[in-house]
Length: 356
Image (tube, rainbow, N blue to C red; front, side, top):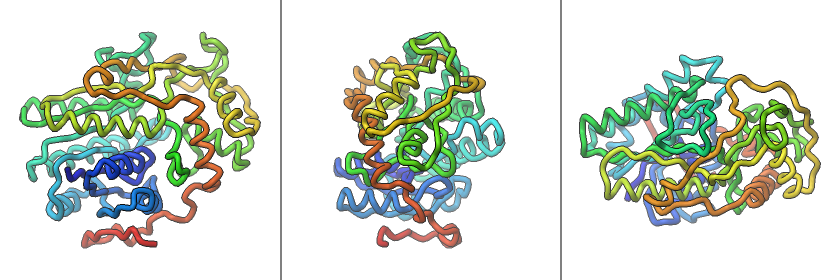
């Protein structure tokens, strides 16, 4: 199949591109490169030995999306593109609603125009909000408590309405838990702009010496050691989940929702200890106040994905930490100066080169 991957240069998107290519799919990548680097896609090409079209496209620019669909016979879409920082979403909610929700509506309009009706959507466990019901099942009540989570929930509801109006659509909603890790080659990994929002990339930067210490938000939760407990999943396991979801869209119409997690919860301090073991480095930390909206415990019930998709996470926490550390050692400053220049966003739309 020819798969359009939106946000394909991002952390999860780039790993999924590798898995798609290695399974023999053709891919077309679009990304606005606001929080990703073109270098990630060069490395995807190097790892797989395959080239593919890349376009600098913002989903808010509907005409540019149309040009990509007109240039390529797209069979299905894997939709990652979107802003994703919880804290930032609270500061700039309108930006998040416009980017994530309007961008997805534009994408769906173009899909309908070109009769493409298979979609895998990158959702999030944040749609569940802060709940005491554990493990979280797909039929649990949803109550997002921040603008980022609300954009994901809104999009889920929009896609359900799209299917209700046209039952030929086949849509899979994947609710991620906490992706960490990196490709085993150490060539691609998580490279956030500025200060990392997530635990593992922050710890990795402390271990490599780029940051002084880790701040742990809350040490007085009712957990085994007082710190928050989360379900961490290796990004490659997450990527393979998208391939299984894509297979389902070929055979079964409807809207289907799946948790992608391990079903196991690890505390922040347990993750600190695991990363110290993987890196051989000490991770100095301080415990500070809780962040508003953070749940004490959050982990998935992944049984539905196993039963219906034939998918389950295969990599444990030690592997997640080892792969994260390998990426950080090989790339102490991430992808460095590989950010795309603004000139590529000018019209007319042009395909970007994978060559250096």
